[in-house]
Amino acid sequence: MTLFLLLILVALILGIIGFATHGLFYLLIIGAALLLADLVYVAVRFHRGGSHHHRMAR
Image 1: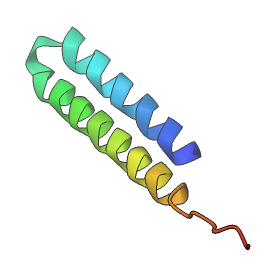
Image 2: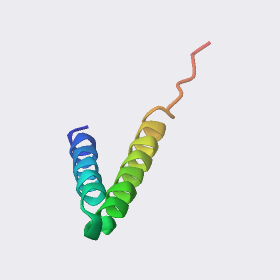
Image 3: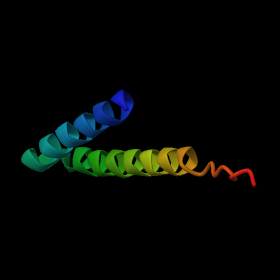
């Protein structure tokens, strides 16, 4: 979870710098791509973690 929050923070900082500075638009693109990759990582991690279904004994 710490990695997720750190990557979200880095993506936001890169996005803000890329948006505020006209010559560094590529940082905005990198920040958006990093944010998207981070969200996919968390979705896959939570999906795999909750996929274990236990059968009840009869």
